[in-house]
Image (cartoon, rainbow, N blue to C red):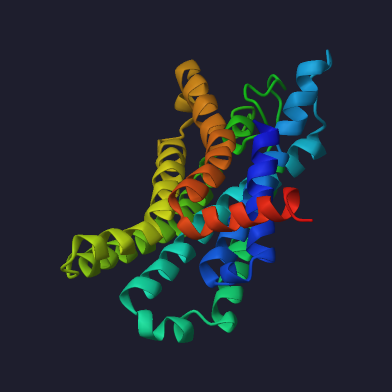
Length: 285
């Protein structure tokens, strides 16, 4: 699965760079999303694979903090980036004549940079507050990686401050982009309904169906994971442990693996670009 993630997302990055037809804001964001997915999975899957082959399944405290920081940073960045991509689709469908002005290079590059900045800042703040907690319990992390909720379980101090910071971060970096996505797609749907021909509606919807599919899968699992109550009692629930591990495996491994498949199957331009790249690599003289 990790190899599929590397090959699939690497291919999307490659075609977004090499194919001049894909030098648009939409595919610039898609290249960032693919790079994010590679980084996100690389923070957890290689150590996990190593632990399968090793009898000593340990990680240092500093290594755990780095893994937690990188994983949280990539996850937050993806949430914000998906919101930016939804705005891009809104501008393309609802304001096609002004699209090149609204989504100029001076606009979409800072939008992508802001997504990365938001992810790094949020992760740095949350990680800093977690690592200063006293950990005097069992030092076994009941998870596949140093996920922040799993690490908080080991703290032997009041974590209400961490819960408040997590609530604020969830509101800013998960719910706010989600609100932007909902508003953007509401306006997109209203715009599509004004198109009289079914062929025209289908053509317009096909330009955003891949992104909408990714949003539903990613946000569905993220919201289920982080919008539940996180009191000390619920954090110690075995049922919660099993559920959280399955959900984190889904959005941490399954979703990055599915993203290239979704975009390559549902996006005509990506399919054509992949075909051209394949022909150039294997059939050019």
